[in-house]
Amino acid sequence: MTEASSCSSGAAHPLERRSVQVPPRIYFARAIDGEDTVAAQVLASVVASELEQAGLLMVDPIVSGPAQLDTDVDVRLRYHSIVDHDLAVLRRCDAVLMDMSLPNRNYIGCVCEMTYAYLWNIPCVVYLGRSNPNRPWLHYHAVAVFEFRKDAIACLTRRLGPLAPTAREN
Image (cartoon, rainbow, N blue to C red; front, top):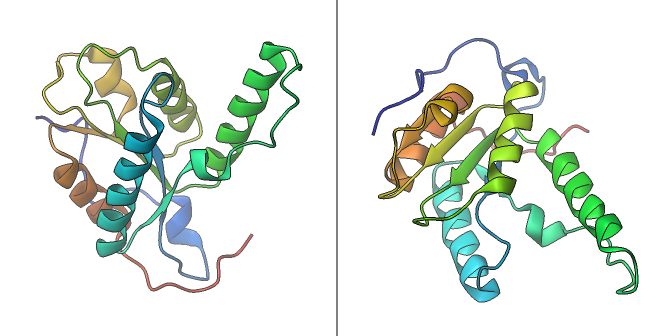
């Protein structure tokens, strides 16, 4: 797989300007809608462990989820609540690790998250598994694209570096 751009530590990222060093917060984006809930939780647990071993902190927007709305509430309001929540979580992260490895999956939510990350200058590293890597728009918006998750995590570590855990400034 090719990298969209360098995984080395580059231009000053907001993380590098902080006075208190904390583990970089990595937003984990992946297929959720229509997927098995238990499988999604297992994957998140595995990825959290791999990121922790690399000195990075996984942030899962699914875990914190938006406040539950009444089931009678308009579906559009419920969807707005979900997206607003996820974008608020994304905005507080230092990078994105994106799993786009399910074959023939429409990654509408992930693509939107990647676009916001790009616009907000939050680096997004993607792993595709065996999916087609020949996607110009993907390579344009991601800082790097890999076949395997381990390579994507290594890229994030090189870009952000593991930092000693301390209290996070808000």
